[in-house]
Length: 359
Ligand code: NAD
Image 1 (cartoon, rainbow, N blue to C red):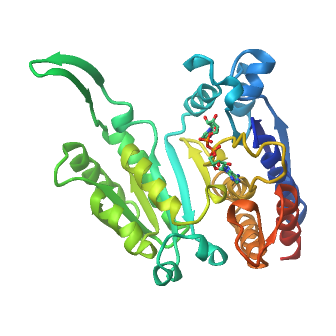
Image 2: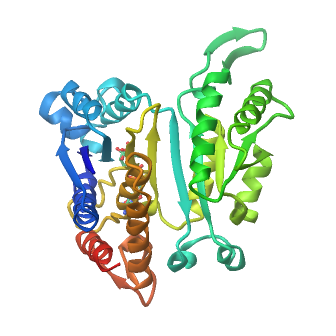
Image 3: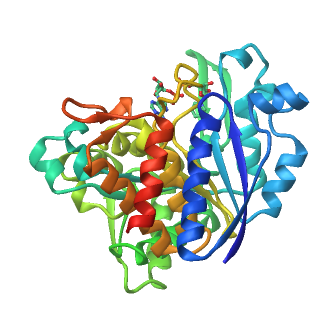
């Protein structure tokens, strides 16, 4: 398989973790006989310094022409004084919008070796956590009509939760399709006992489910879902949510897995071309010190292999390698605990890469 990948290393620890991701891509290519051509383009603060624009047209064009995009992180104190649309983060919003990424996939997996790092009670953690949150990303409350007015009781403000059936159907399809590659269960989160938008959400999800008779569907009110994620997260496979509910529940689900340095994500649209990135930021406090955890970015590569390239076996090989290296007691500082061996960014990347060849 021949694939082109645009790299947007960005700022802070971005370039260091992207370097490790490229080593993993090269190793997967060597082991499985693929060709992955990577090309780095400026984004974020680095792009502001080079061109005055946080996401230059040339970077957008390269992303459009590639099969997938891998982003490190953007931002840092050096650019904090800039106005909104000139800030590094504006570049990130632009590329997500330009690529039409309406689906945000956030897997929350608790590795056996990191159970002690989870705030879950040990008997609950022992049942395992392997949830894929499929969050709608371009509609709902964050994009609805909003405003501020003056009323009889003083200042008023409003935001509207609005969804149309096209938006609901396309994100539901993503959830059902992905469930087919997992444990074939979708839990759709809503507040259909109160909200009209949630009633439409539930209606359209049920209609969409008819095309996926092999996937079990259940509905859960968002307040109950928030409770169940800490009470028994092992019950969830794919969690399908609106924009705001997903924003909140994905933070809750991610914290049960230990460290922000472990969590990958994917932004997907109508095509197979996705944007993959760790959920963490540029960690300026760690930049250039070879101490950042590269695993979130390496697991983002696994997501790219699976979701953009359809290479499930290769994705599993990367995930297994991460799991084995953690099992062999190697830890970066963020997941360090007594009795473990502390390693830096490059060493962790090298260990995972070597493990891919071994297995
Ligand atoms: P952050 O995620 O960069 O850091 C939060 C904490 O987590 C810090 O203590 C950091 O050291 C630690 N951390 C983050 N990634 C780590 C890793 N891989 N290994 C070990 N520890 C890690 O969030 P922040 O400090 O709020 O933001 C720093 C900058 O990043 C800001 O400019 C912010 O706007 C930007 N940011 C960018 C993105 C993105 O590019 N997607 C996301 C969030 C924040």
